[in-house]
Length: 252
Image 1 (spheres, rainbow, N blue to C red):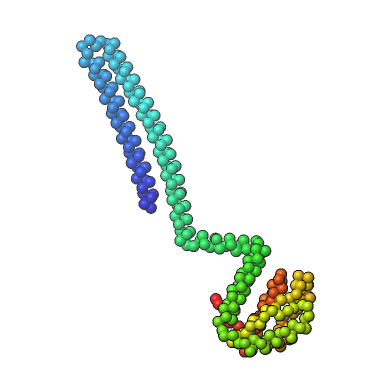
Image 2: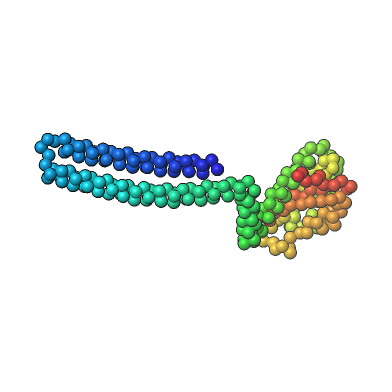
């Protein structure tokens, strides 16, 4: 509202200045005409022809004044029209700015952005699936780091490690030339077994050893288990919890 009042005040001052200027011009021209007429009338040698010439000069001056006034009126009318158009444009701009400001205050922009994001995901399901896979991998990697921290926070159990190593060595012997045991390490509540699948690149998915069967069938592990496998290198890591112990909860 302050901006609108400022624009109206500015228009009023401008129009008043033009009108005052017209009045001053009119007064100046009238005084000049009277001076010329007076100079002719006081001359002792003035004749009838001089009087006629003075009257003609007065008529000419009056005509010039009228022409100046008409020109100024036309100019003033054009300027007032331009000011009216400019003022209307300014009012429209101010109205749009207020609407935009209210939109930010109401949270409409955030709502639109949210709708556009959802629309983009619906239009590109492959991207949505790829994003979900990346999030799953990141979440899994974070939990594996958590398991490693949990493992190294406990005391090593050498006798349990020897027993578990013997059990899994016997289990892997049933898969000659397919899988080999690298290391076994046990702590208070869990064991970590490292192994490797031989020639994993030349084996099909059906030919790969079933790790869940090896853990709970061949090695007869009674507790909970989890494993990860690198299909390029064939490296395997088994996380084995002692019977009756749960895996640590995932950090939120």
